[in-house]
Length: 120
Image 1 (tube, helix red, strand yellow):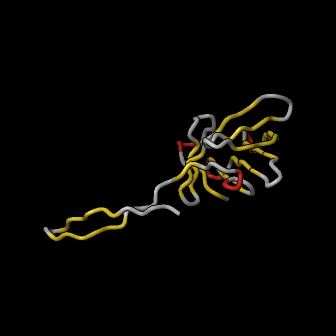
Image 2 (cartoon, rainbow, N blue to C red):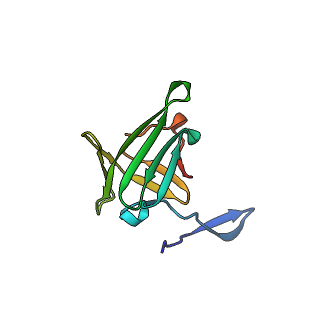
């Protein structure tokens, strides 16, 4: 459970206490991603982390044609997600999650305008 912090708030010389918003957390377990679908670029691109550890990444290209990359995934204790891509290659990701918003921390995944991903 997240610890909530209280911040002092001063309005017109009066003091009050305001509840600080919950902070984001790094996903550090398989359960944090299993069964999740993350939409990037206003839904044009998606990452799917299936419960059986299969991975699907759909990217919308020109003329609304999609490219699909498949593989398998695991999460390490430090929160690094390792994706073994079918046909060779490995991708590494780290996600900072705040509610339904996802931020990819390695810079290996681009989203239009740098917008966060959303659970979809």
